[in-house]
Length: 116
Image (cartoon, rainbow, N blue to C red; front, side, top):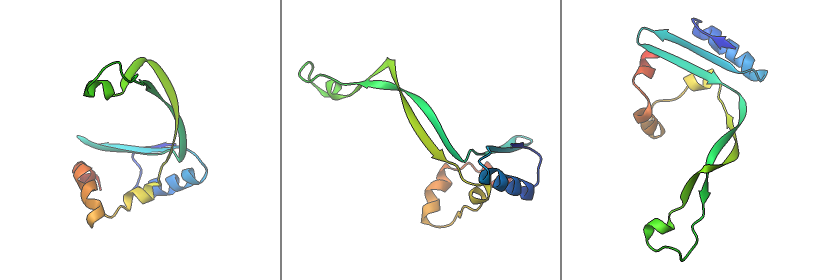
């Protein structure tokens, strides 16, 4: 389900219904130069392709460069990953006061608070 130009109450209600029924949910809007996008993919599993790390044989070279793992971009390995997305209600209910929020505030763009 993709929503744009909806009221906050509508987005919260529709997201809750989608999350409960395992339906993917996207919401977004643009206000001049500012905009937002929210996605709730529920319990989302996916596969990521990563380069294989080649092991260095001991005794061939000396020094710090020899001890570092080398990336072989020709060979890749597939890694299965899983993410749990939160409800829109939970994302909007973040507490921005206290010690835990200090680090998050540094990583959050000021535009986020304009959209709130």
